[in-house]
Image 1 (tube, rainbow, N blue to C red):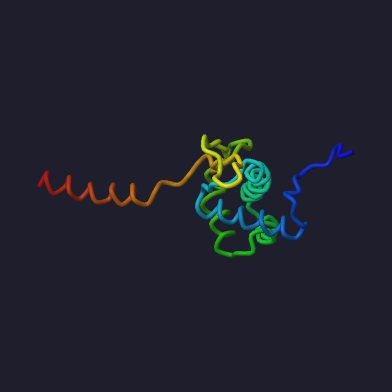
Image 2 (image 1 turned 90 degrees about the vertical axis):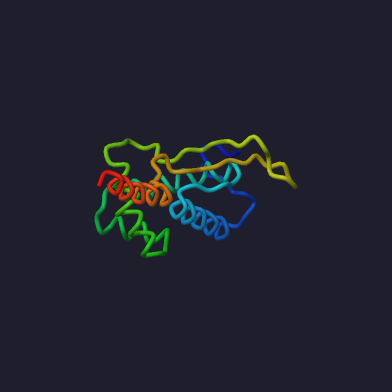
Length: 141
């Protein structure tokens, strides 16, 4: 019986499963939203939320633990300097899973989008805001 056994196996070896989840965590923290299957998203949620909780502690040991999973200094820096501070004062719930209506073609797997709840402002919006400000000043002058 499988009582009290947590985690999904995904019909993969332990090393393949670990590599898959690491890659998905890296993608989620880089792009802040990814499209995947529901079971993978549910497993990814726990891994990602643990890393964001480490980022809230923001000490050297937490950085080293995060690097152990991410294996990318730039991504660890982004996690602790940009993503972590967004969630200060909150108590979990750093990710959101949105189920998609259309299953994946080929095997009809249920698909979803997993994203960070507090996403960064889009660079296009920031660029538009900066270009509008000088134009308004020019009209006033």
